[in-house]
Image (cartoon, rainbow, N blue to C red; front, top):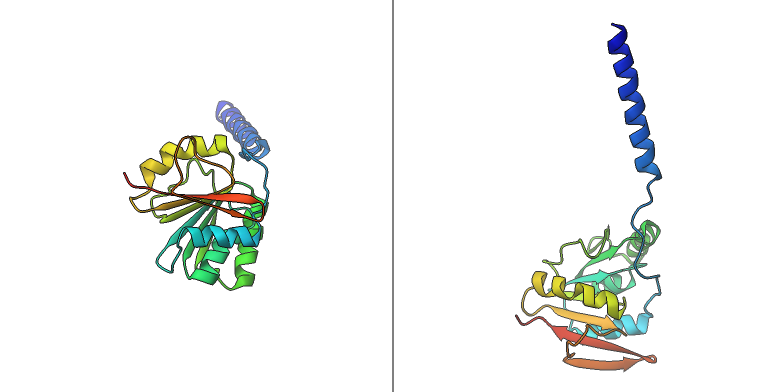
Length: 179
């Protein structure tokens, strides 16, 4: 009997220690700090991609949600924001509700390298050249032919953009997956 009580106490102590350690372990941290895309540049990105109501726009590193919210509000598209920072995800959800598009957009607190992009017809991003290069094979592998990629400011390695436009002192670039 004493041995059973000791085992139970030991198992309880181990379980508590594991639970405390899991709560204390910080979540993933962003590879890049958040810098919002201006509304004008966000709209130019969506125009360059030719977004319509039949599109599903994924914004990688979606921040406060402004790009997918604009895609839903102005173009009638569906939107998915992928953001690792839980505070920005909460802000994005509130912004979508305030804009009246929470039925057309969702925000995922996920690592953009791990989230599936298979439903995307348009991918927008304002990341960095290094992160874009890390995403390149994922974009090629998961996006269907005809899917468009629009990047604010940063290229994707040696991929030659099919279109480039300047807006508000920055550039945006467009590529289409052809396979």
